[in-house]
Length: 233
Image 1 (tube, rainbow, N blue to C red):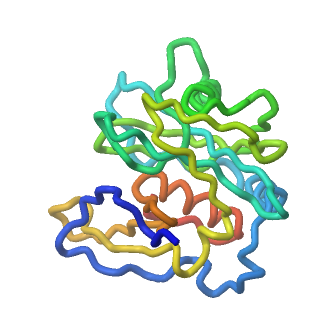
Image 2 (cartoon, one colour; image 1 turned 90 degrees about the vertical axis):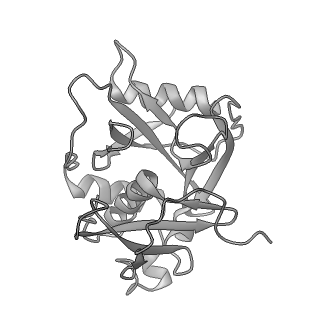
């Protein structure tokens, strides 16, 4: 079987150190189990998403991603993508389907359109059930709004657009909260400062999820499990 972790390029500083255990470390396997109904109830109970603590320059286009969820055998699964290797930015990284907002469309329309374009996801029956905390990436001067969408069933046909996507990944949320999958490192932030910022990683078979996507997954998982949201977002 393929080992956990992937070839993603991670700009880990030399003084990075192990971080604290996951917020769900004290929960049993049964308490960590998530199906779509539990996720939706938790999202509705959590209240509005938090705004990003940092905003990109005025005039920058905003971005949106879709967090597609569906139940399979009583467990919630999420659809992710591995970005193509020939892209100029974030090549080979694991991400949610999404991208920049086009003129004349809403952010949720942008998220749905990108999902259709990137992986041929049929978005006609997707129910948008909430938003995760908004975030921004300093490296790309982009603000991101994540929309959680529920699919009626496991998609029967997901086709990666080779111009943007190398592979489609489907992962159970129960796998993401396993002790041997999630880990945290503490990085100085900013790189020349003294403040330690938690960086989250999910080691899948053949891939490592980190960066903005890992932060969004942490937000989703903490909210779904009724745990405090990570302040390092």
